[in-house]
Length: 247
Image (tube, rainbow, N blue to C red; front, side):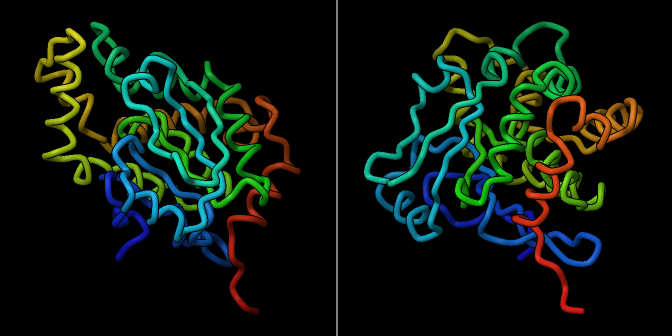
């Protein structure tokens, strides 16, 4: 099983661990930060799977309408719920004419920096984890935030792109069909273009956004400094998420 393989959590399709990726001098620690699609269908079996993993916090990136339609099924779990809405729900945003995934991702990285800063800062606190970051698909908002977490602690860019790209296979079939049905129930026309936006995770799209990030003043570290993710916060995140190899 690779680090990008979906884990067997009932009620989810794209639940994964950000652990297991190599970094200079070590690898990312398993069981600390997970990424996922929606948690609205967990049921007793899914909640037990989260309980067994010791989940402490759930960071929900969805907006209020999405949360009302598909509320997280967390009753009975002793977890802290953190809500950091990025923008209008992925279905509504994706249905906007002329708006592509690259536009959405750039908006997350360069306009919604308050969310990026808040999430990375929270994840640097060992008391918050084990944590789950999730949205509806665990693909776009979650994909971009997960990429920034991994890059911040030193994961190679190609591994980060592998992690992002893996979502496409995880969502194929039942998840995509269910999401299309939900969109239609909300009066949204599910065009082939919209279905692609909902289900695909093209490597080239995230790579293009990361190119823009690298080209910004100071590259990744300059960007993180500019949004308030200081060197101290970055060091805490690395200390928490990275296991160093024995000398």
